Image (cartoon, rainbow, N blue to C red; front, side, top):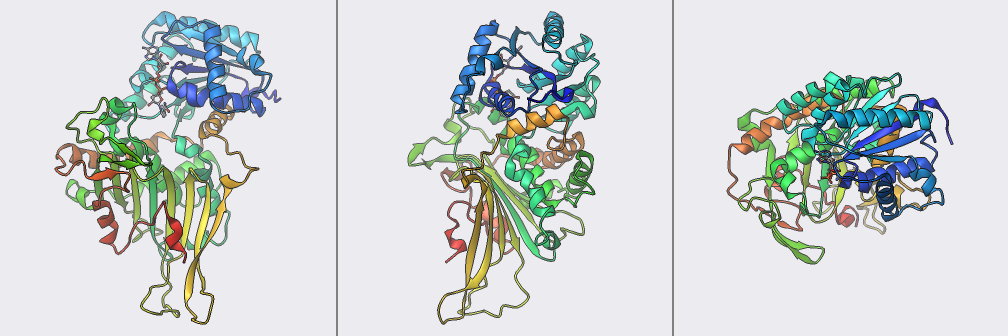
Length: 501
Ligand code: NAD
């Protein structure tokens, strides 16, 4: 096991009795421990409202690890001994004094050089308060490093995000703030950079001379489940587009960085986001469409419409689906639309990027009035992970016609590959101080400024056609028109068989 002092730290999880901690954080910490990525000089403090003992906390941590289908070794008790619980009230100064005392004791017990990670796994309205109390009570006053991991949502518009950022910045510097976008922890999202910058066959084609359009789909088959209360105030635009979808756009559109350092990559992503063409309020409806799911059939079960879900206003005008066309005003991308769509209760859970290449200047194989199939590069983000390329080959036989053929590489299908959870990678990055896969404030600010124009227009108009798509479908028909007007169509995410004959 490593004993490098850099990764010796205390991880404080605010909201340690919550869903995120249980489903994602404890299993991720255990995996890091098992893989030797976490020094044995570590401790975890679970802070939450309930009056739990250390034993109760440790039992819950053990259960969450067992339920996450990880192989549990004999050493689980040794691992659990690093976990301590603190009953905590966000706005009570005494809670922070107790926290500081506990961390100081743990530093001594586990020989930790005062390195601290504060993970905000609780409701966003507490983020700013906790940060200022941490500073005011000297919890961040250490000789080691301090890092703050903060969950989404980072504000609900530019103004609130700016206010939250100002609050956080009073206690932490920008370098100390790790804003989680768990999409950036996904293997294939990180692979976008590798595909682009490690393959001589793609990077020369990665521009408006050879690419006709790029499509990003992130669909869910689930509805809002028990998050109706949160979701009805957020909607798909804030929940998915402002963060995950725009982050994927930035990675696809950015210029090659000079080096693969946090600074250089972030600079290029920020430049790409700056090049997004802003819309005037009058233009919003030409570039963005929204939808809300009605009843329908998903996985052979009849499901309720959005307005019938728990904690959702029966007259809600919240969008559960968004599709949009993004225009990037720079030399590389002028004239290449980036289409995005995301929604709940769609046909299936899938995140895919399709890069459609331009047709050749002349089709020598033009027969029976059929267009040649365009070349496609498909990046499968989840649940499958891999890459497909659609090429044209010769149709077997005497006709001399062409056939599209699909070459598949499925990385998640290989037995040898056991993809680490996004949270595991991101926690590890934070422990080693690598902020590349976290969002910089400038990225957050630019994406809110872009999204705010759309949400303002939508807030001030009532959609008359909601619900406008059936559960189990690929969204409303108006999303197809967005592409059809440009002479394109969405490539299927479910049945890709029509890429080949
Ligand atoms: P949750 O409601 O399950 O847990 C909230 C936690 O906060 C609990 O431990 C509770 O005890 C604690 N808490 C609430 N009020 C408190 C107070 N006044 N003082 C002390 N502790 C208090 O929430 P969650 O689903 O775990 O989500 C936490 C954060 O993570 C939210 O910001 C959410 O948006 C974000 N998030 C969650 C998920 C997920 O999969 N659950 C995914 C992405 C982002």
